[in-house]
Length: 234
Image (cartoon, rainbow, N blue to C red; front, side, top):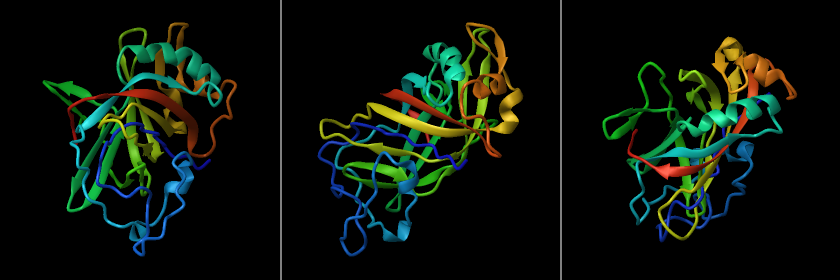
């Protein structure tokens, strides 16, 4: 199963000096549907370098009101979704340097006034293609983490891989309001224990029940959430 992590991020930029749609170096519009994660893996050489937005974007966002897709992983969603109210399982951060946008998507921990990606649960960045209507990772983020506070108050770190992010902007304010994340939990994480409101389970027990099961790479999960602006250290 080839899985990407897609994030539909709404309402981030207002009055931004960005193209209305992704364009090639000749000005020709590129066909990049925002809600098809496989369609956003396009060559960076075909994307016109973009100016930074005219508004000031927050350095990052935390996932608020998150829930996993019950169609993909029914038991996992039913038992894990209630746990997600305790803390954001993932954060998004973007940065621009020398005309290129980078993005990180992974769980953070709080250090003072900052949300940081902890060194013992590292994540790799990816380049982001950005335009007025939205953005997308140019290549998958290789590794990242979800962090879930379980019913025993233990923080459970879940590895994810083959991560891609895509998003949409609205025209009202520099506010990212919603996202959709598609990720792959590797099969090697199946033995990780998590205490849900129902019982102590392993990820494998939860993810195998009623879903498509794992392929050679692992299980596909989808997380939908609202976003809350936060100081995330890129």
